Length: 210
Image (cartoon, rainbow, N blue to C red):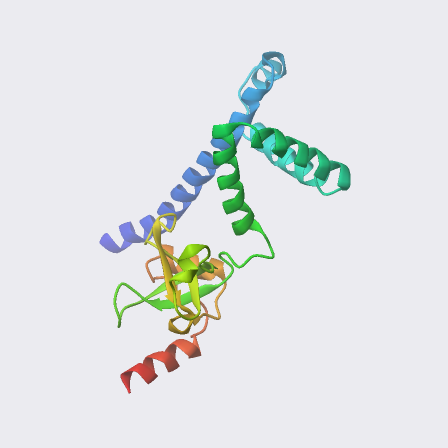
């Protein structure tokens, strides 16, 4: 009896959580329909509420925005718009702070969240997975001797919260593991093991034991 119940849970829990996440994402993106006049609302036209129309609209707007700003005219319009925001005191600080973070994370040329690392944290002898986010800058770099990197240590099972550390580059191990694999490993609390073993990890532990 217990075995059958657990087997049922293993089937329905992932399906239920997946449906809940999708419903949340679609419901959030459907809020874009509020920008349309009432007479253009799908509910007014069709006489019923249709989920997913706002999601399609949101994705379409994002795609068209990227397409328009990929040329010279779009870049000039974007520069003009950012110039307007730059003149608004409070908006300027919020917008540019968020823009710097998003540019760093989503840029294909940046280093942020492109490398999974193995570090000793919170003390020597305990290992955890972290992500490289860049290098220390500003006055902080003037007080650090040697080569340091900035890392983000996510918490389990919620990787959206975590800790920011600056560590010597020689104290971290670059894993032969994609960021997606590392996130699955973290979220599953180590249950879902990535394919293959990292030889550097084994060599590092063996050398420390000696």
